[in-house]
Length: 314
Ligand SMILES: [Zn+2]
Ligand SMILES: [Zn+2]
Image 1 (cartoon, rainbow, N blue to C red):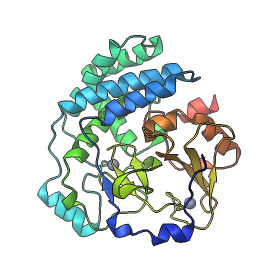
Image 2 (cartoon, rainbow, N blue to C red):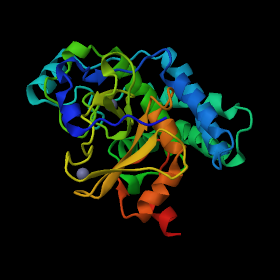
Image 3 (cartoon, rainbow, N blue to C red):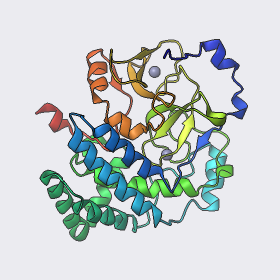
């Protein structure tokens, strides 16, 4: 099957006024879909045990999201964000309801009884549970570092679990958000709802979004539209190239930009109907290695995979 590639003129001739600007997460299924995709990717995969652990984490996230009800943005905050074109659920600086740590506690409790839990993960979970009880302020500090994407302040081992709880929190806020309240103008390059960086993008099939590319938020699970063949990091349109692994899996490319020397992955739903940005990104780390060798750096990381400087140096 030959992939249909829209030429630039063709892309520009599409009627953008009918393209939905925002796709909000579906509370009933967002993390369950991710868990299913992670399990599918884990088959015969060199990182199988890690992907299965993340699948169990996504199951726990779905469970926690179901019972999650949180106060959203107040009217004043929405008006202010509309006036200044700022994300109404801006994650950095958000006064988190302390109950978010109960979400983390619930995730850890469900995970610790997951079948086949690797012993190292069990230790990380245990130490996180102790810190939640004895040093909740340390958990808050980690959460702040994660939301601000200050990689050097992040404890890589516990980061995926804390991040998972924050994802449940913001996904709940994003699912409840009234789309009509979205500011007309949003800052470029970040999620229009929560201001976080995208993990990757997906070209969607079906309905008004058919053939359109959406950037996928690493935190609140929302997606926002960005015209294809455009750098999602610096907005350049002139030096974009697409890379894929020869004889590699279908439906995955890296969209690189020679203006800023970065790339993000792009997944094609017409090839993989249940593609999930977070899951498929974790499942295709070989492409990251090759892009690194080609001199490009990732424009942003995966919310469930963190590296510390020390780890890289050792
Ligand atoms: Zn977001
Ligand atoms: Zn660029």
